[in-house]
Amino acid sequence: MKSTLNFLSLGFLSLLLSSCALFKEKVEIEETVKEDPTAIQADRSIIEQLSESPRHHQWVVLKNGSREFQAFVVYPEKSEKTKAVIVIHENRGLDDWARLFADKLAAQGYLVIAPDMISNTQGKKRTSDFENPDAARDAIYDLDPQQVTGDLDAAYQFLQKDASSNGEIAVLGFCWGGSQTFRYATHNRDLASAHVFYGTAPDDAEALAQINTPVYGYYGGDDNRVNATIERTENQMQAAGKKYEYKIYEGAGHAFMKRAHLDPTHEANKEAHDAAWERLLVLLTSN
Image 1 (spheres, one colour):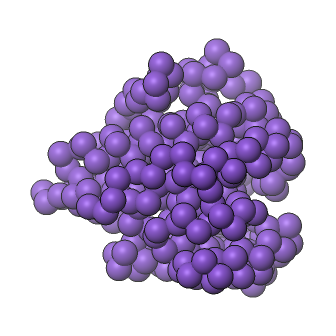
Image 2 (cartoon, rainbow, N blue to C red):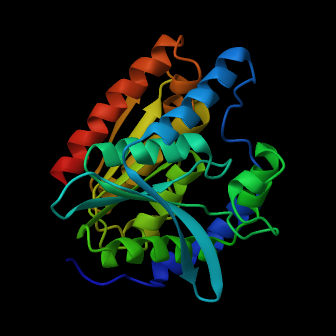
């Protein structure tokens, strides 16, 4: 196990201050998929796949100081101790697609936890209790960055203590969760690897200098807003001597991992999904 968690470093403190403004900006960072018959059918397919999974699913209650919140855990079907992964959902909360992604990772032999970052906020027990995805999104942007970090620490510590974990823990996230993945890597120096799916990095060179794990990016070629930040991030990571490797999947848009499931007829998103999935599995194995 590497060094202990690097709580509240100077770089991280400055990052928190800059992040507060970012959290309050209700910028639309996930393209909305229209509720057409194909998407409705895909939603049904997600629920069916979750219900038919042979793996053990479990909701757990985690503590971050006095705050209690829920997380979805999936156990792999294997006898030996295994690597573990934290999955951070996008800016619509922990929906069924995110839980299915956690299940698919567990099918590859990983212990997976997906914390519901808006659990027990605004009087709602879980994301599924919010009136609609937009209400969940609004709750996301009202979150305190320090609370998010504390929640992720609680998820990390759950994996550390679980008897099926070998202590090697990676983190990955999508959209808002991708940005939080990058931010969490500036805080937790014990991560095995960090995987950022179409999320932006903190614009804070001192914070990036705290990173102690390889960071891998997965971006859609048509995701102009996110991709406009890649060069800056690459330059800052190189200047700090940190490992940052990324792939841009041409023709794919923002949220291509989810959109490929909701609309499998979009060839570029589907190809990006499949290539990114294979890359993720290779990198999780090697880190």
